[in-house]
Length: 269
Image (cartoon, rainbow, N blue to C red; front, side, top):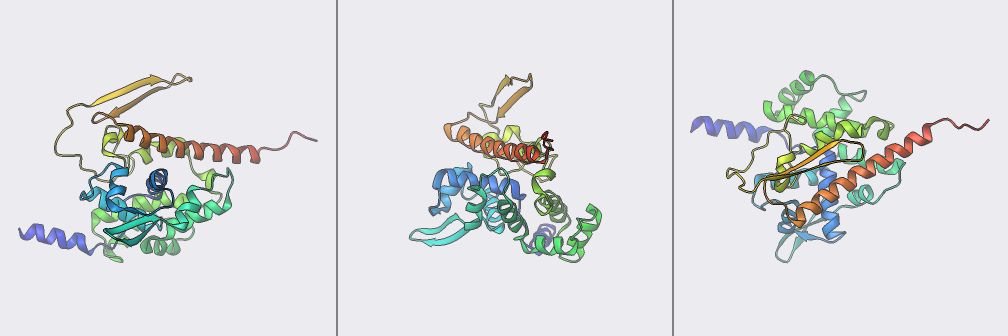
């Protein structure tokens, strides 16, 4: 019992830090926008949109992360807390221009919004140090537990791309895809496609194993084998969630393609 209490006290000493990286946090904001647009919504509705139980720790951690990046604003409603997308979130989500310095700057602001993140990036403005140096700083200078420091270091390194210029050139969509999909913010009905190795985040699946797991396989026009595995029977909301995710990735591909075209030398003489 004393060991458990000591463990809990150790966890409580860690400063607040986002549970997920900025990229999946923006995806969560995109899902909210697809359902609520600019309107306020009760916390229970947000949990439903994300495929979570309102009382689950995963939902609470994810909600806290999206708020810590400044993407959500909390308001008081007639029946409890309400949240809506912030102006910062809307400027990120609705700016679909292929080459948008303003959107890049807003993403940078979001990445720097968590106080610890701002402090870390100001301490190492030329780039983050090694994981050992970074975790040492988080543990001994900022009071993180070892596990939380390791997770925070990985998230900081993922978010670093939003502080580099030019942003779009530094983001490798193909390599970033599995890292994003591995985040625990994905709806439970998509847990079958989650891998835990890319982000290093610890994720605990439901205690009760699903009884109707299935997968869908197909081949794309380029001959690439594609498989989507579901831990249960997918619903319309599951496919809407997947559609939102794919739409976001397509926007990133278009931005990268447009920037590459602009950088090519002209053939005119």
